[in-house]
Image (cartoon, rainbow, N blue to C red; front, side):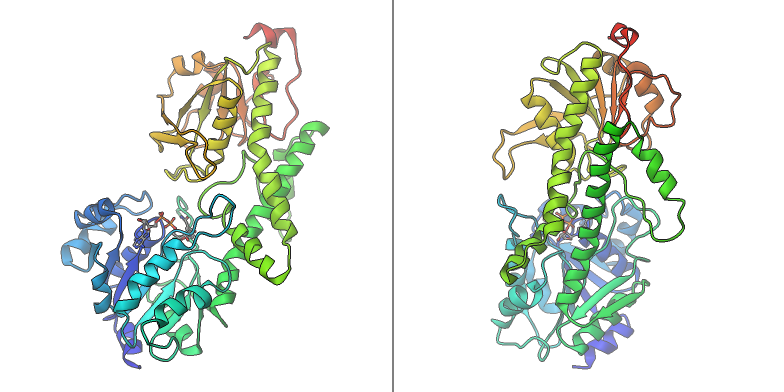
Length: 456
Ligand SMILES: NC(=O)c1ccc[n+]([C@@H]2O[C@H](COP(=O)([O-])OP(=O)(O)OC[C@H]3O[C@@H](n4cnc5c(N)ncnc54)[C@H](O)[C@@H]3O)[C@@H](O)[C@H]2O)c1
C-alpha cells in the first residue's frame, strides 16, 4: 500500500485520464510534462487519432504540449480500457450534462466506472474530476468499483478533485490554479494531493469527497447568482435611464467587498447553466429547496428573451418590425475567444429570433458551424454556417446583435456599416456619443428621432 506514494514522489507512477476533452486533455499533457507516463482514454476515435498524430484539438493546448510527449512515448491515447490494468492512478474527466428535466445525467460517469471495475487492481488511485453533486463519488462511483470485490479506502484509493479550468484564460491554467481534493480516507486524500502537487499548483485538501464536490458547485453557483443579480439590475437600469456598465465600473473601484460581474445574453458553457441544477436536484432529497439557484436560473434564462425584445425595440426606432428583418448575430460561443458553443445563450437568442420571423445569419471566427435546436428540448434542428464579416454583410443586416464579444472583431467597423447594433457586452460603450443606432443592454435606449428613422 506504500508503493504508490513512492511512485508519485519519484514520478514513476503511470497515469490514465478517461475523457480527453476540455478538461482531460490539459490534465493529460500537464502530467506528461511533469514527467509521468500518461495514457489518455477516450471513446471518440477522432480524438485518439489526433493525439496519436501529435495534434491538439483544444485551443488552450498547443500542439507543442502534445507532439513532443507523444514522440517520446510519454503520452499515448487509446480507446482500449484494458490499459487501465497497467496504470497506478486513474482520473475520470467525462461529461456531466443534465437531461430534459434538468436532472443530472451520470451515465458517462457510470460508464467510465464500469470500464474501470473489471480492471481495478489493489493499490490503484481513482480520482473523479467531473463536476457533480455531493455524494456522487461515494454513492455512484464507489459501489460500482467495489463490485470488483476490492474495498475503497482499504484495497484501492478513491478521491474527488474538481476541475477549475477556465478555457481561454491565459493567466490561470492547470499549472497554477490551486486544486481542491477530498478523499474517502485521509490516506486517499494524501495520495491524491501528493500526485496533483507534482503538476506545480498548490493543493487544498478537504475532509471528504462530498466537501470537494460541493466546493465546485459553490464556485459555479456563486457565479450564476451574481451574474443573475447584475442581469436583473441591467433590466432595471434600462428603465431608470442609468448605464449599468458605468455603475459596475464605479463599484469596482472599491478595493474590498465587491467583485464585478457583467450582464449579458444569459449564461452558457458546460458549467454555470448546468452545475447549480445538480445541487438543487440533490437538495430535494433533503427536503430542501435552493431558492437562490432557481431564481438565478429564472433571471438568466429570461435574458435571451430580453435581448430579442431589444432587437424589436431597436428595429422599431427605425420603423421596422422583426418579422422579415435580417439579423446578424455576432459571436455564438459561450464566452469570448473560445470555440466552445455548448449551451451558449446565442442558441436561444437565434431560436427566438427565428420563431418571430427574422432571417438570421451569424458570424463567429471560432465557430464555423452552429447547431440550433435538435436538443433535449426537441426543437427542430437547424445548422447555420458562419458568414464572413464584410461591409456588405453588415450593410445587408437590418440589425447586428453582439452576443459574445470576441476580442479580435472590429467593432468600429460593425457600428460604421450596420444599420442598427444591439450590444449585449458593452463593446460599443466607449464609442462616441450620438450614435443613435446603438442599443446597449442595461443602458438607456437612444431617443427616437426622425433622423434615426431616416437612417433605415
Ligand atoms: N469545459 C470546462 O470548462 C470545464 C471546467 C470545469 C469542469 N468541467 C467538468 O469536467 C467534465 C468534463 O468536461 P469537458 O468540458 O472536458 O467535456 P468534453 O465533452 O470536452 O470531454 C469529455 C470527453 O469524454 C469522452 N467520453 C465520454 N464518455 C466516455 C467514456 N465512457 N469513456 C471514455 N471517454 C469518454 C468524450 O468523448 C469527450 O472527449 C464535466 O463534468 C464538466 O462539467 C468542465
